[in-house]
Amino acid sequence: MIALLNATMTAAAVFGDDYQSRAYSKRSLVWLLALAPLDVILYRPIMSWARIKGTWRWARGDKGWYKFERNARAA
Image: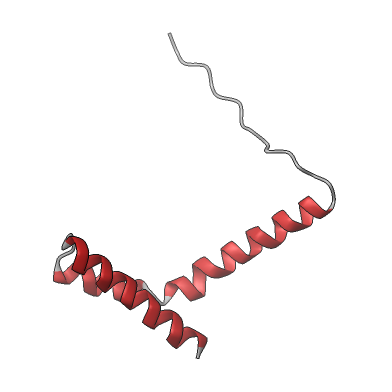
């Protein structure tokens, strides 16, 4: 039921954006709708893991941003 509701909402969002902007071809719309189930299978679990990991670190008192140092540019 959750997957069906998610698919319905994704299709509505894609068609709503297309209705507003007409930026997609019919082939692109079909491709977007074909890839929509991957949202539930791949994207959501990755985002859930990142949220759990971030919450765990926050609960332990780790509040660093871990900013990467930039590489020096070649002359």
